[in-house]
Image 1 (cartoon, rainbow, N blue to C red):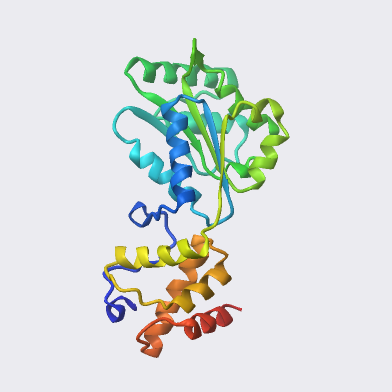
Image 2: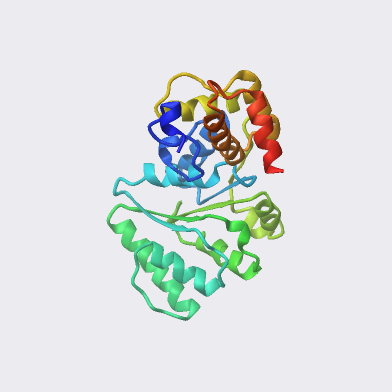
Length: 265
C-alpha cells in the first residue's frame, strides 16, 4: 500500500522468516556459527534460546537452507507439543521415512535404521526441534536424550538441535542427565541500538531503497520501544511507513514513531 510512495519494491518489514532479510548482527552470526560447529564437529546436540521475536526461527531456517546440499537429511519439527510416541513418529516423517509403527520400540528401531541408511550413503542426520519449550512432559525430553545414544565408536550418528524461548533452558536444567549431554548452548540476545539502526537500513536496502528514510531520533525511539527485538522493530517500522504515507511525510521522524506507539496503546 505504501511501497510506491516510498519507492520500495517490496514491503521491508514483514514478520516472516525470509532468509533474504536475514540481518547478521554479531549475536546472530555467532548463533549460526555455533549451529554449524555442532554439525561439522559432530558434537551431538546444541541448544539455542532467545526471547520471543529475536530471530531464532529465522536463524534455524537459514541454517537448514545452507545445509541443503545433498549431504544432510534434516527433519525439522515446528510443533513439538506431542507425546513421546507422536514425536518419534513426527521425526521419522520429517526425515522422509514412510512408516506406520505405533509402538515405541518399533519407532526406535525404525529411526536407527534411517540413521544407518543415511550413514551408508554419506549423509548426516539432523533433527531440529523448534519451539522446544512447548514440550512439557519429561518423558518426551527423555526420548530426545536417548536419540544421542545413536553412536558409532567415536562419533554421534545424529545431531539434535533444540530451539526455544528462555524457559527451555530451565526445563532442560531440571533433567541433569540431558543437560550434561548438550555441549553447545547459546542465548540469542536482542539488538543493541547501533545494530537496530543498521537493521532498519539493511531491510530498507533489501526492499529497494538505498537512502535511510528513518531519522536518527526515530531509530532511537524505535529501539527504546522495541528493546531491540526484531519482530517488534518490524511491527513499528511497518506501521510508521503506513502513517508516513498517510501524512505524506518526507521522512519517518520521532513524531511519527511516537504517534504510532500511542495508537498501539
